[in-house]
Image 1 (cartoon, one colour):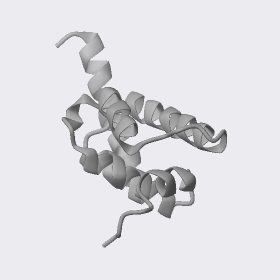
Image 2 (cartoon, rainbow, N blue to C red; image 1 turned 90 degrees about the vertical axis):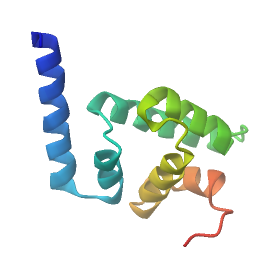
Image 3 (tube, rainbow, N blue to C red; image 1 turned 180 degrees about the vertical axis):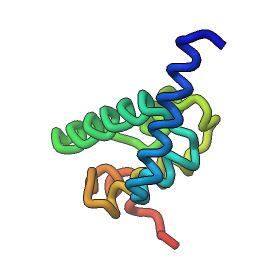
Length: 110
């Protein structure tokens, strides 16, 4: 292992430790799906962008959102459930509520 790989691995472990410490619904999902700190930042940017598009009345679809999420997190491998679950977790936390409501709010929740 070279220094760069060790630094990346250490950052991943430290980020996972932070996720466990804060223990919110979204952090539990990030932990479960092995989301990195960098991917976390890009997901936050995607959520902001979707919120902005919704507020501007632009078309936002779950399929486009899921495709973007997979580009950010290739380890999801077409796991559209993650996209729905993470937006629902953010909704429960009072964050980006309009994104969940627009993309998945019409579905019956268990």
